[in-house]
Image: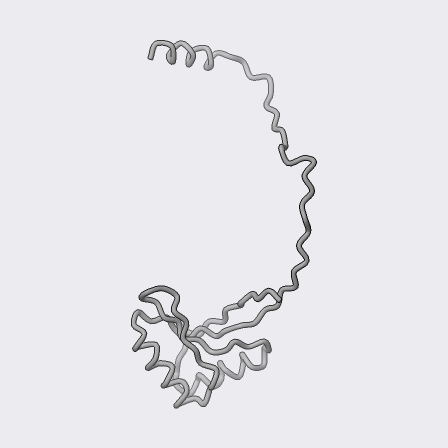
Length: 117
């Protein structure tokens, strides 16, 4: 412990003239990845704790709105997302929002999905 205390005293008193940072990545060429990215969109209706609740919401949407693109995705063990889509057209998203007005569901959210092709 005595040696550490002595080194600490020297370090505290040592003057600093400057700091230099060396880039260790110089000379490495980064490969350019040519990926085509395509997007589609889903309309998130709600997340449910129970699968049965999500299934009930899905049936209600199909029966009362006529929307056919209704799905359930398991996010985790106790998180099930009901969503409309996917859609690749703004007009279809707008139609889905309007169709959902029938059941007075207001907390809709548009989510963009990235798909590599």
